[in-house]
Image (cartoon, rainbow, N blue to C red):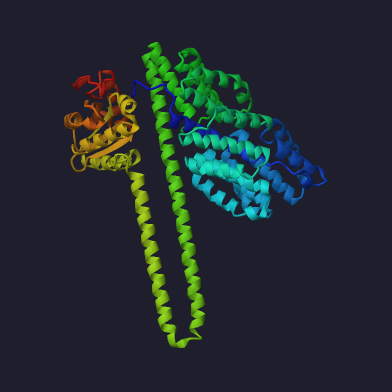
Length: 608
């Protein structure tokens, strides 16, 4: 996507990234709302109050908080088990304050302290759910595994809740096939009404993430009606968001707007920032599609004011993108540039968060694999001990048997040690290299560049920096699909990597933007490298895509004489010069603070 022409059409992956952010909320508000069983209630008032609080936690937050206040006042006459139950409810209440850190901290303590299997499992599941919001997925997966280990000692309703938690967490991780598996497994067990509501919501969420949809919209409508009947407002409105996305993707944006606006008051009444931000973000995007610029602006500002303030929040990204488009259409270029910068900043933060989530899932799988390997190794060690006892009875062959087993153990340790080391190297490579182009990723480029800048500064050498962004790249994606766009990015990386000499650092900053750090190169030399890259891009043969066109980019250059020995300042100034090249007609090179020096405006692809 270029920086000046962004599509207003719904993007399934972007929508679903937003969906995952808000989906974590329904996990906390619904999945852990356990309905108390009347026959399990004790005769005393505290047990009855605890049961009522469990029932209304998600359906009536105001009543829940009032009951919790009463319970905390009565805690001095409560039993130790009741006190722990009150602590769990108090941890849950931190959701309404946005203090997920306190929720996790208290739930972890309860998990370690509680002797009651049900309370212990609930605390573990609350940690797992909280991790879906705080994005600490490694922690969430660990506590989910700990909680599931208790499933044979808890009620069937709580076991069903654990399946919902597993579905929520895997949907948040982007593992939608697993999320669908857990949701459908739960639906096969005739779940309680609340668990059924959440399972349907997770199933629809997973299908959307997999690029699929239910066979008929009425299925989603029935799920919404079911959640409304349980007074689960958040779940029902998350489902409405899914249905609106589906309609908008089919070209029915106005129908989607009507659906969302008719329930906007209910959404805002939940006081849940992630859901509010998501719905306002969708409304802003769809109103822009139908040409309602003022309405789009209003909803975008509402998303920023009322939604989640996380740096990785997609409603935040969408709001700034819509405001950029609004100001651009009004011809207010300074305001448009400011909104675009805010959008680019938020979008990069979101992309970094997605990569971190994928890394956390892979790391968790690796930890589980190592744990299983350790268990297998311990099992073999136990076998050695057993055989050693037999050695005393069979002295004739004890030496050979012991030596053989010890040799096997050593080989196993060496083998697993080798595998662990290789796995560590593989993860180190993944953390440093952009998996599409094979060059440095943004974080590794910065690390190497900062080291090089320190060395050059100590020796009195200049450091050049150039940033370039492919022109009209959205046209490639629109015409040839993302596979064609990915192929172009690979060819760009190969072409420009051949221009760089030893010691020069080349990396992908994100999307279609690249950067090169040039130790011991002045501004003229930096411009020559930029010109060489520009020429190399022009040689890319695109005929494999079915037609030939010229790949071009806009380049921005700076050097430490102008920007100082600070990586962020060098990057910002080169980026500013690159923006100036964009506005100067594209396919040109511009120094920081000066007019374009080479090139001319040439589009990447002209679509008839």
